Length: 159
Image 1 (cartoon, one colour):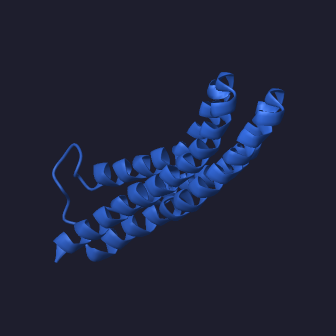
Image 2 (cartoon, rainbow, N blue to C red):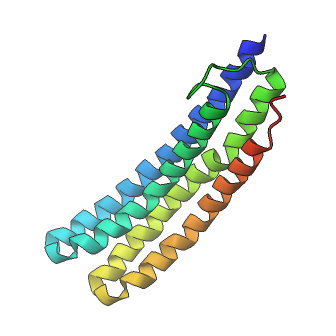
C-alpha cells in the first residue's frame, strides 16, 4: 500500500512540471507569433521581442523546480525512494497544485500581455520597459504560487 503514496506524490511532480510547462509553451508561442510578424517588418527589433518572448517561459522553470523538489524529497533523485503513506503522497500532490494550476494559466496570460507589448514596441520601441512591466505583473502570481508550493513541500512531515 505504501507504494501508492509514492505514485501519488510523483503524479503531483508530473503535474507541476507538465501543466506549468504547457502554460509556458503556449505563452511563448503566442509571443513568438507576434514577434515574428514584427521582425519581418523590422529585423532590428529582434532583441527586444526576444526578451518579451522569454518572459512566459519562466512558469515552466518554476514547475520544474517544484517537481525537482518533490522528487528529491521522496528519494527519486539522490537517494532511495521512500515508502510514503497515501496521506503523505496526497500532501505532495496537493503541494504541487498551486504552481501547476497558476503556472498553466499565468504562462498563457503572460504570453498574451507580452504579445501586446510586441505591438507597443512596434510603434514605440523606447517604451519596451513599460511592456516588460505589464508582463511581469502577471509573473508575480506565478512566483507567489511557487512560494506557496515550496512552503507546503517543506512543511510535509515524512516522519
